[in-house]
Length: 456
Image 1 (cartoon, rainbow, N blue to C red):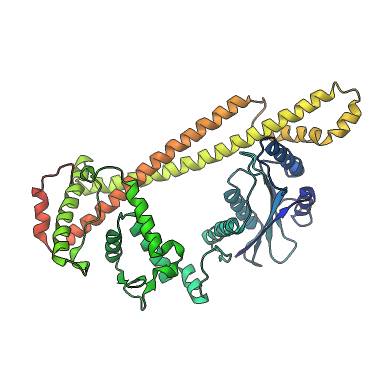
Image 2 (image 1 turned 180 degrees about the horizontal axis):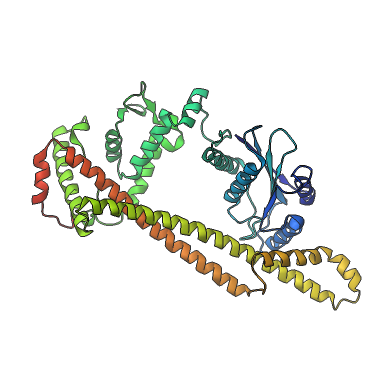
């Protein structure tokens, strides 16, 4: 498990940086890494970024930096793994916008990471906001990374507390509430009104109790689970609000929609209203959805089941490819923004050094601007490590970053379209299961005689 602490640095960040980079605590500085800065000159680079923030009237408040500590249980991880997880944690929390130095201390029984990051972003020069909400957010990130790497999660996330038994079942994936949350989210995501939401929950196997509070019970569950016990996001009012947002997303007229929905298994749905009317609606709905399903397969030449399976696999592979492209683009965008930041700082330092050549007292001038002279050499080395031997123009860097961000936006839209198609194919597969296992074969046979129009 990883415990998280965060507190601001208001007086001097150099002392804090010197402390976390102590060679006796970091295996002779082997367990030190950084992002967008050099560990040796991090305090100077932090200060440069803060000065730029003040010029842009964005650097507000008196926090210089933040000190984030991530502590692991004794014997839970080795130093290299802890350092790797700490870098992954810092990268996700700071999103490539803040310079940071991370060190892993091994001088105590529990291995722990120290992360000191600038309070001012070098991308848009905004100050990092640290409060209860942001603390719970970074705890959720830490919990997820720990869970993905087989470690126990422990930090608070802002959610209502669980009992010990429920917490253990939750981590094992056996919690009724965890399963119900997943089912509710899935049902809401694919519904546009309250009745359809309840129908989807019924089709998922849940028994519904509508009284003072909406409650559900899974097939093997002993007691009902009230929705309000899942948190404020799952109250009846929140569900209605989320469904209302779904309705607003659908802009096309109803008679022009050709979206494929789930086939309704009539025998499994119990309604307290007009059962005969519901049965008629459900049968007609199933015929329409069957026709839409057949039309989709026909239009996409997928009537052969092997072709259909291959199409599903191709869509999945395309989504994985999009994810990989996004990862690569995000890394390249982050790299270009770091280059841009280093270039801007290097130009400032270079101008100060050039002005020193004309100063009446060069020795006094150099003493006054000692930090700029030191940073000039450090930045030059960092740019060389990034493959920059000739300083690119500001316009060229801005254009390069803009082009990368446009490519990223295009891939995101392509991925969203692929995910919609994947969702449609999943619904088609479920519809086929219902059709093939239906006891009312006359309804299935009527599909062939349905005249499909756009309004279906």
